[in-house]
Length: 203
Image (cartoon, rainbow, N blue to C red; front, side, top):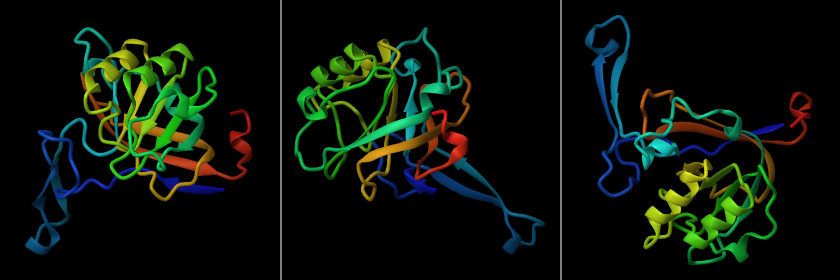
C-alpha cells in the first residue's frame, strides 16, 4: 500500500486564483518569546489551494461545504493524464465514462480545465465527482458555465489537486474538506492510496 498526498501546501507565497486572498499565518504565542507553547492564527480564503466547490459557490439556496455528503469524496477513482494536450479538455479526450465514477484529470502546466461541452458530458454520464489540478475547472472563456453545469447537477468539484508526479490509473481516493458552516468552498486534504489494502476491498 502506498499513500500519495495530492494536496497543495498552504503558504503565503502559494499560487492563488486572481483576486482570491493569499493565506496569512501569524504567530500569536511563541516558545521563542517565552510563552509555554506555539499558537498561530491562520487567515485564508475558502477556495485556497486544494479545495471543494459546493453548490453554494453559485447557488445561494443550495448546500454549503459542511452539508455536502462525504460519499462522493471517498472511494475508487480513476486518474487520467491529459498533460499531453495544451487546450481545455473536450468530451472526446476522456474516453468511456462510468456512472457514479470519481474522475480525476491531470493536465499540462497550469492544470486541466474543461469546456462546457465536456462538463455537460460528465452530467449526461452521471459522474459523481470531478477533480482537476487547475485552480479553476472551467476553460477561461467558459468558467461560469462549466461550474454552473456541474454544480446544478450535483456533481462535486475538486480544484487545485497536486497531480504532476502521479501516474494515470486507478486509486482509492479520499478528500475531506474543512467543515465550514455556510462555506461556499472548503480547503481540503486529498490523498490517493495505491496497491492492495484488504480493508478497502469492498470499494
